[in-house]
Image 1: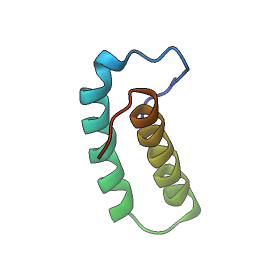
Image 2: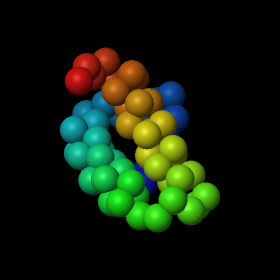
Image 3: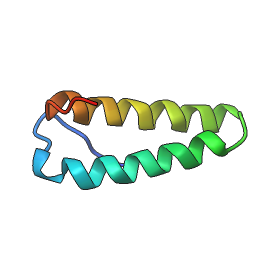
Length: 59
């Protein structure tokens, strides 16, 4: 998970960051459905969405 995503995020890192976040998301989704695991999934999904929106990346 990326610790500090802000409006001045450098989109030149988006490819690497998205790859890392998507791998973490898959791992988190495979975990149990504890409140902590669900929170981690939500945060990862939000970070992925932020980067895709900020950097105008379409699926």
